[in-house]
Amino acid sequence: MQTCSVDPESRTRALEAFREPDESRDGVLEKFVRLASQALGIPGCFISIVDDEFQYIRAARNFSLRHSTREDSLCRYVIDNETPMVVSDTLLDARFVKHKFVVGEPYIRFYAGVPLKSRNGHILGTLCVTDGEPHLLSAEQLTALTLLAALVISFLEAWHSAGFTDPVTGLPNRQRLIRDLQYLATGGDNLPRRLVLIDCIDMPRAYELARSMGMGPVEGLLKDVATLLPLRLRLGPGDLLYTVATGRFALLVSESSGLSAARVADRMEGISADLGEGLSVTLTTFTGEVNFTAVALPAQEILRRGLSALHEAIGSGVPTRTFSAAEDVRRTRDFTLMHELASALQRDEGLYLAYQPKICLQTGAPVGLEALIRWRHPVLGELSPSAFVPLAEQTELLHDMNAWVIDRAIARLARLRNHCIQLPVSVNVSLHDFARPGFADLLEDKMLKVRLPTSLLGVECLETERLIESPAAMRGLEMLKLRGFGISLDDFGTGYSNISYLRRMPLDVIKLDRSLISGLSSDTASRIIARNIITMLKELDYVVLAEGIESADVAGMLSEYGCDQAQGYFYAKPLPDRELDAWLNWKLRNKCS
Ligand code: C2E
Ligand code: MG
Ligand code: MG
Image 1: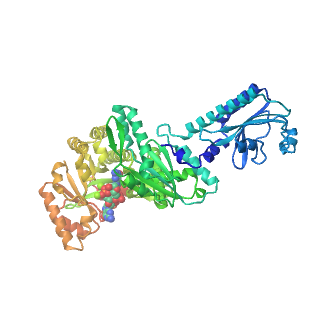
Image 2: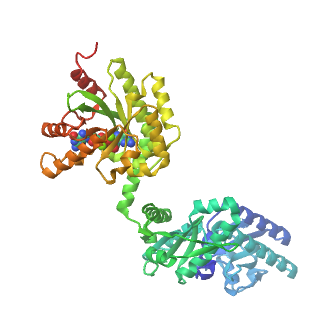
Image 3: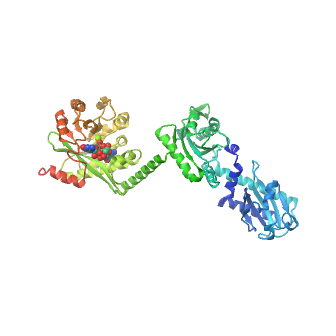
């Protein structure tokens, strides 16, 4: 379905498109003007677009005027009467004898103009020949001018529809939406309006379909949806529908219309579209809306906000979202931060590792170090991992970041070895890394290069639940174990409560989360829980490490319950390089032969 037919302002929109200069289009119009002048043997010729106020000359030959009011234009007679007008000698015509363009520049003495009439009957301007001398125009000449005008309007319409219509759905396209919004703004429109973005086709799936069936059915699907949409949504006469990207639509309505994003999602529920050959697919619809007044926001910004809301809905798996400025600020800030993280990693600027010692509860001696990433941001200052790791986890950047951490940690191990200190260092690695084929081999190569045994590098894994559900990650973990890397389960005791999974994972160390430890000094229940968990884990033969030890009392209790190792501010905070050297020197003094 074409929205042109429901668009009451199609004349205005076409005028809006034509009256603005456009180099390539006007280049063709210049050729028409030259042809008309030569064919009729009249020196002056021009093509004008006339709206309710002005005349815009878009192409001209031997005619100096470029712009005038509609009132002043001779063309308005052609347009008002919707017929050609020939004035052989303006000085002999009472209407024009005193006309400003006759008695002054450009001194029109002869004028013949024919209307440029669009397919849907709107007169958009004129094709005219003119001269400073009087002429007689033969019937053949007038016919030639009329035929040329028909060619000109055909060209203009083709130009307009190619540039502003989606070729597959036949709906107005994104450029047209932008233009319409700009048009509203220039017209001073301050009515509250709403733009609803609609995503109802799973494009990756559609392209998968195209792989086996070709593009035909996919285009059929897009067309089908474009036909179904106006019917399902029950569009009113002022509601405009666009195709803004493949499989994505936009609805421009006034805010008072009942068509909110939620209503759209509601009306689209359960809808299925035809693929041809008896196949149909059920569509899942996501919508995002932005409320605005055209005068207050640039057109591109309105569309960006609509898209942002749509992506918010898709990202959170809910049918609909309304644009929120606060959310948008946060997203933009996150996006900037990730951009900065990418460049910090690339330039190796501002990121560093802090190492938190792991202590043997029996002897008080260090038994290992955990590498924790830190970022000294040029503007925001010191950032803890919680400010950027969860964001990086949502992007490909996490791989780069983890690779950076692993390289630094291995370099640190090599330096420790050079100072005859043999302390394993563990890194926090995400599921995506385990799941990568060849991850264990890569780590082994890196260790071999600096001639270090794999047992000195440990990995701490989070996201237990997702890990055990991913066969690739579980395989990756097995490979790490086979290669001799130490494997710890981080944050035990948070989230996932079913612990039968433990037997399926090749684990060496279980790290009890700080939340299990924090209540130990104050409440009995916490003590009972911690004691039983430790007993159980010890019976299963794991090394048990408690995180977040902040006092001697708690360290004592844990030691009593049979816990093996501890980490926490009581022993040491995570230490940057130089502080780590000092701490180790102090802790391990006299140990180096
Ligand atoms: P995690 O691996 O469980 O690390 C322990 C966190 O507890 C660290 O926070 C550490 O500074 C903090 N902590 C240690 N002892 C105490 C204590 O006694 N009291 C209290 N209140 N806190 C203590 P941090 O460095 O902010 O790291 C937070 C999380 O960020 C880490 O939890 C880890 O999941 C993640 N992370 C840190 N570095 C990296 C990294 O290089 N890569 C990845 N993928 N994640 C990392
Ligand atoms: Mg950890
Ligand atoms: Mg932890």
